[in-house]
Amino acid sequence: MKMRVLVIEDDRETAQFLCKALKESGHAADTAGDGDTGLGMARDGGYDVLVVDRMLPKRDGLSIIETLRAEGARTPVLILSALGSVDDRVKGLRSGGDDYLTKPYAFSELLARVEALGRRSDPEAQTTRYVVGDLILDRLSHKVSRGGETVPLQAREFRLLEYLMRNAGQVVTRTMLLEHVWDYHFDPQTNVIDVHISRLRAKIDKGQPRPVLHTVRGAGYVVRDGDG
Image (tube, rainbow, N blue to C red; front, top):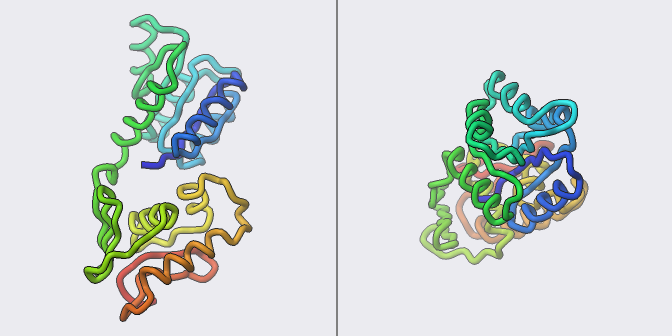
């Protein structure tokens, strides 16, 4: 499961390391260097998990969490802190944090906790099979078929189709695809999406009585069973 993670950490070197390591682990990651900026990004960014340092300039980490919870946001939060007593951990969890990791920590443990929080909050996390008409994508076997015939896809094409099928019936914008499939590695004006959509369409729709991958002019793309 690919996630969007926001790291709110005032130590620039630590923040850059976490962001780079999360991206290398297959996730998208952004950073914020103070509490006010972090709160604003958490409100607006559509993140799957927040990693929040407890001691921050302008607004401390617990204040960020309490504000988000008061506003109804349920985004899972992993608190990072050098404060590791039982009372400190209890206070962090009672403020609305979902997990608490004491500094210093191993990145492998942080990654495991972040991914566990993402699975817990994602209703699709346990879904292993997506079906749209006679198009079937199996996440476990990493195979795609249409009308009973196997459709060979490259890794990026598979991720693209998985994201589109996960959001079947909904228009997916180019920005959404860049964020969730390409991890911001390309400029929004690039034609990389068009190229991959064209290749994917040729593989899943060519020779079929009706298409399932549709372009919504000026908006994006949608996978659905039927014309239009």
